[in-house]
Length: 358
View (cartoon, rainbow, N blue to C red):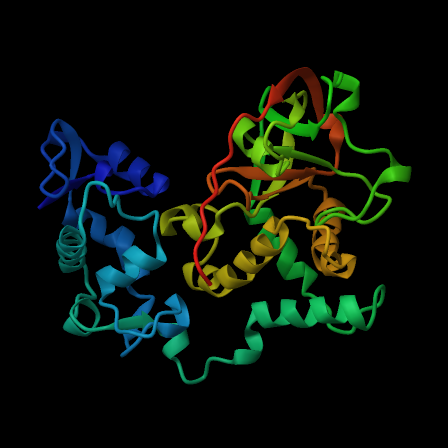
């Protein structure tokens, strides 16, 4: 049986298939014609490190937060949402594909491929809850907010944090475009679109009071949403251009990274699985919108996080937008890396809200 790169979303795996395949034909799984195809057996060595993560277990509550049994293909598809191409393959085809890849390897057993599974390190009775990085973050956050501001007792492992961040590093090249919006009655000038002056800088989720950062969005739609503007109000949008490469820590959509993308970033898979809830927590804290009723103490942990990134040489932190799920924002420490090149003036003509009962 042969598959093709269109069966998958993981960009690294797609490159492996396209660069390794010498045969063109029709994919047996997604049906793509004239694709570069690769036998499932030849993919087995690439997938075995992933299959080895699993052990038989009655529920996947610990890893997926869903208290029910998951077969291997279901767990792979749920935990790694950017592994298989759900637009091309339904769950039955994913099951067939996983089974065919597994049969080409050396560890194919009915316990793993036909029974409910969970990550082995979670099933291991010797796994220590004290190693939970997410809990350590919660302890640190509580300490810095309510007990010790500058000499905290609940210290973070900054060596580990630096190691993780360096592997999540991204560089935006020169001429990358960003956007920043300000609600205004008239069109503002280029010079008025920069970060606020030191004397007027209030605390944000990334910046401490008195230390201004330049908050940018990676697309126009996101920056419009981030203003939380009202109907018929007007605003100025500045387009910024990178004039130097921007080195940043990307906490954007950590949970959407595919396993081969993770390996490409020099993570051990089991190591990353342990880190992922921690990184999701950091991303979530940074992404929360600043609200008038917030207590500024709530910002202290993420301000520490950003200052740490700045201290080890990064120019910015990237995080998912809470206002536009497909967009992302930057807290740019070093605004000399960008120039505002133009401004445009907009009026909001309509708004759309979605809600659900709590």
